[in-house]
Image 1 (cartoon, rainbow, N blue to C red):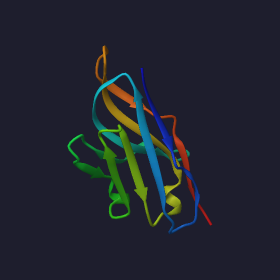
Image 2: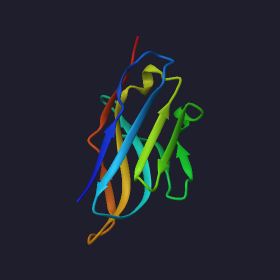
Image 3: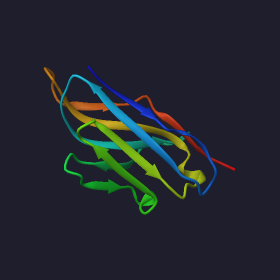
Image 4: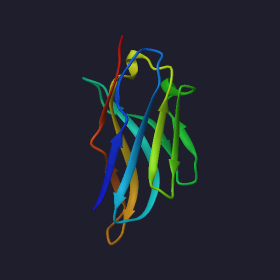
Length: 120
């Protein structure tokens, strides 16, 4: 069993910063890509940023230059540093990991989500 636990969401003023963290735990053999997705009310879940186990990153256009994704392979964690936040960034943010658990097949895992609200 693999679990992803997010932390760091909250309420922030426009233009402010916030850091999200996600830790993977459980019976893990290998983690490939990790990433962050978000879902705003009435909208579909969308990719925010991903990072491979070799450190290659990808961002959705709307967050380029404002958000930075990073990971610690030794600790199985992934962070999302968010800056110059806008009201449009308001959403539930979900951590995702492509994992091969010990004794099971490779598949995607999701965290429970953390709310980010950007508002004055």
